[in-house]
Amino acid sequence: MLELKNIDTYYGNIQALRDVNITVREGEIITLIGANGAGKTTTLMTICGVVPARNGEVLFQGKPITRLSADKIVRMGICQVPEGRLIFPDLTVRENLDMGAFLRDDKSGVDSDLEQVFTLFPILKERRRQLGGTLSGGEQQMLAISRALMARPKVLLLDEPSLGLAPLIIRQIFDIIKQINRESNTTIFLVEQNANQALKVANRGYVMENGRITLEDACDKLLANDAVKKAYLGL
Amino acid sequence: MEYFLQLFFSGLSKGSVYALIALGYTMVYGIIELINFAHGEIYMIGAFTGLIVAGLLTALGWPVLAILAIAIVVAMFYSGAYGYTVEKIAYKPLRNAPRLAPLISAIGMSIFLQNYVMLAQTPDFLPFPNLVPDFAFMQPFKSFLGTSDLFIIVASIVVMAALNLFIKFTRMGKAMRATAQNRKMALLVGVNVDHVISMTFIIGSSLAAVGGVLIASHMGQINFYIGFIAGLKAFTAAVLGGIGSIPGAMLGGLVLGWTESFATGYVSSDYEDVFAFLLLVLILIFRPAGLLGKQRAQKV
Image (cartoon, chains in turn orange, red):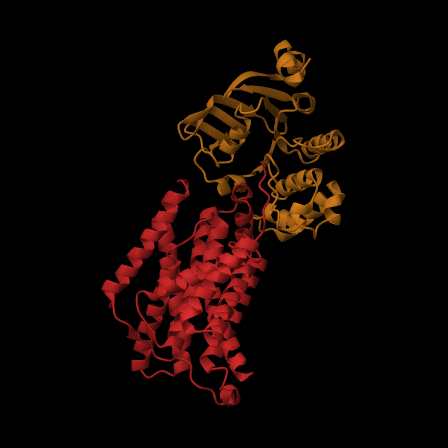
């Protein structure tokens, strides 16, 4: 469904991604794990057209999207929950959610999705008139996920959803991610430093080091892999 | 008391025009963190457009109020087109350059536009017809509130109210607020940020054009240099109110207008600018982010 072929991405003269190949099949959860600065966020930004690849190709449902602008890529059904959540601080919770549906014209569909999101996260319904910046970290993460869902994505890209959250909230967030995948058959691309959690949720995993993919396998095999255990699971 | 009211209303009308121009500075700054130094020139071009339209329609014998309305609308379109073009030529190519580069480019654009109008028109002052007639119902208030002051105040209120509704309720308005708060995230929800930036320049420039025509009709003369002074004052108003904040620009304009007016009336007209900038310095010392600006905590 989503395919990265021999991607090289640069920031100015500095190469951040080297010959990255990733395939995501419809309906699966894949995870990309790696240390700080490995290039995980850049991979997502390249998919979304924010930092376009210099070489290589990104295919979505067989069509090249490498050179498309960010808004066209969102329109095709690829949405990102970015690192640090990036809530619009001075918009209300409700307005933040409206921004997620920015490109949609089907008002009735948007309204029913809004109801669904409020069922998924009742706390957001309670706080819908509050400014986004006044929410706690966990609530902001819920809002960020909801905002992406409001676009009714085919592929949901999540960048470190567990960052800075309490363990209880982290478990809740991961449960929701599984639920979204199961119930609406949304394909999920999960980037995580929390390798242990990510590998338990996902079907397949990729390991990234210094801008290269160094390992790819089913998650249960990666969990048992000695190198992964040592470097990422702290065992 | 009458003298006080007179100063109050002349300050209010002056301040409204500062506010109209200041909005352009503050909106652009809010979206791309650039001080658009060419903005004063856009205002000046609005005044010149108004003069050309007014001259043409006066020759055709149209009624003054119709001339004023048409002059304002044409000036809005024309200045909007200038603002749009300036952004495309002078700022867009420098979007990812260090912040100093577009700033220098803005100063260059300002000098270019001034000299262009000087050469294309004339370096001398041109008379501008008074487009606001004296209404009979204004007679009892005439000693402290002129018709054209009243007109400036009302027109500014209408325009600013319209702007607020636009920003608050339309799709583009929401996109503008979202882009100002986080440009990267706006991109990620599918906002076409280039459109938003263009639209911001067009709206800011049109507002300045409204101010340009109104004040030109009030003052009775214009030349190519009026944009520099007015731009500087409006920029001061924007900073006073808190740059990036729309209500701040409005408040800043009024505070500046009143300060100038009262300083002129009670001290001396020679000290008008002294008090205006003294106020700026004081506010920046005690409230560095401006009156309504946000003191943002820097995350490390």
